[in-house]
Amino acid sequence: MYPVWRSELRRFVLITIAGTGLGYYLGHPIEALILLLVAGNGWHILHLARMQRWFDQEQVNRLPHAMGAWGKLFSDAQRRHQQNIKSQQQLQSIINRIQDSTAALQDAVLMVDSNGALEFWNEAAQGYLGLRTPVDIGQPITNLIRNPEFKNYFDKAQYQEPLVITSPANPHMFLQFNITLFGRKDRLIMVHDVTRLKHLEQMRKDFVANVSHELRTPLTVLSGYIETMQMGADALPPRWKRMLQQMYEQSHRMGNIIKDLLILSRLENTHNDKPKRVQISELLTAIHNDAVALSGGRHKIELQIDSDKDISGFYNELRSAFSNLVFNAVKYTPEGGKVVIRWYMSQDHGCFSVEDNGIGIAPHHIPRLTERFYRVDPSRNAETGGTGLGLAIVKHVLGHHQAELRITSATGKGSTFLCDFPARCLLNAPSAQ
Image (cartoon, one colour):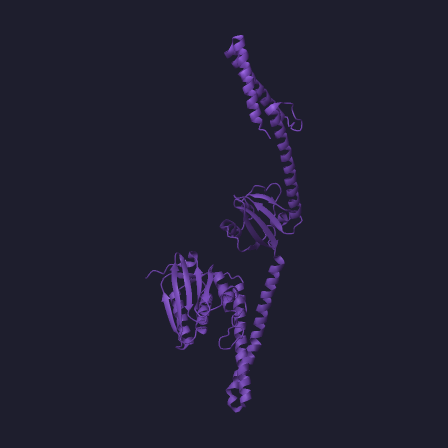
């Protein structure tokens, strides 16, 4: 298509030449040229005013009569305006469908801008969170959900794991928040009612705790009778001796399982005890001595305390967690191996690590090691087999202390279990009196 501006330029040049020639013929070339320029500007100003009035009166559907470039400009403006209206209608249709679909969801859906202000939510969000339309539009979401855990979770912007808290509108309802970043740090928030799951989880915990407690007494009686019978085993046939030994081993193993289940049950229940200073040097020295006794001289066990920081926490829990890691290292390290127990600082974090050069762990096992009853060794050998609850206990203990467990291992090269304690859990060594 021939460009409009070229035809306009051509028309302007021809009119200018003709007007100047007529001015020379009449003897007034300068006046003719000025008159021509004034007339041309007036022509364009008139069409500019027509276009301004055309837009202001929203009469885009009525195309004004104009020639040349202005006619083309009016036509293009009308066509683009109609395309814009069509696009807006399509977008509005999509938005309406999205709003209708989100309104039908049982889960709450919220959209928050980069400043944390609410932009949109569906009907379920009103019931779950107590939001009000349109009063709460544009309000910071942390002002409407007044929960310190939610504020920390929202501001931290690390949403790999969901957050479960009670509903601000109903203290008996538990809600799970899943947040996704998009755009320029805008957030899409999905809120799911997990009250039933929380109740089922609590029922499971109560059931395990009650059953473990009830089994402890009869199992103690059985173990006592078995031990009594073993004392007179010399008068029994060899076959009976083997049976009594197996009964003793299995009852002892069952007792350990019940003990660990009770420990887990106690850890899972929120306690109101205030944390106290745990002197790490004394704790690790006691664990080191126990590990040396367990090894019986078969391993080289080193203790390295490179920091005088202590932990604000619970002594019995930390002893249980640390000893689990140390005793596992001794148990799974062949004779002649080495176990290093270490307490040190990494930046402002306190680190407790247990490193061994034992049999190691295959990579596919590591993500599941803290699951209850998960065992790398499926044979459940009495010599190496524990209850499968030790690392689950470690995980819960570290959770009570806002710490994390990191595991690195390779088959045949040993393992390192690292407990990372944040700075807020650490205490300076007490000053000498």
